[in-house]
Length: 290
Image (cartoon, rainbow, N blue to C red; front, side, top):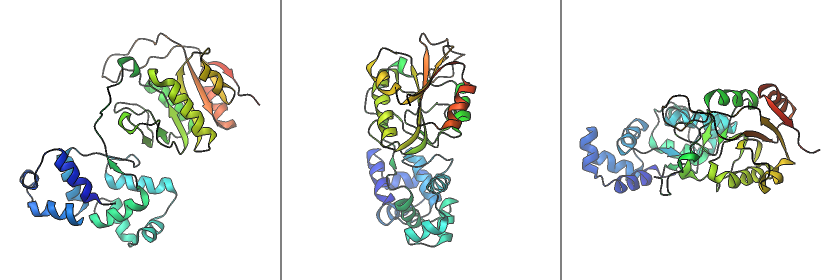
């Protein structure tokens, strides 16, 4: 991982010079140059430059800081600091400093090579924005029920910046969740209305391959669709009794109820998850085929 190369590319894409960054942050242009060319500097300085450039990272677990995200990613992998240090070829204290945001950039790069080799700057959205009816964020009370049923949401492949889903990882529109692996123990997916069929097929494929151990889909109830019948035999379903109030993504008053009914389809849920689902959501339960 060469963080310096990524910073330089981002700086040039934003049309900023070394002098402009130095003047804005009160540091010498040579300090920025050493970061870009030699990966020299500290994580504190790196974060200041990232903030100035508006650079955000994807491909890493959620967290308030870069170090916290690395810590969360390490725990998700089940590795100790010793394991990461051995794989990265640095000392355990160096790993600890990286996770506390006090490490050197050279150590950060070594850790990222091990923990998150796919980390990259978030790309601007180049596709057309989602249709307004596609932005139907899962209501917060229903999200709480999802967390209760699944225990934890490791991945939300249809993430939104205003989503209420507390997933460990999210794929946003620019990440293209349809083209990426859903490797996780638990996945919750409330797909965009216009792309529901594609995400349903992707969910079934990821579960069938063993990549996603348990996938909970929240979709509109269209029992006559072909994809619904393709998946229905493998999924436990709850046809929800009441229509949900989806959110638009804006801080608006409580939205009106959706004009359609919804169904929760659970692929790969164990007995405990299915029992919690039946006890949590009011509706008709349809078990998977045995």
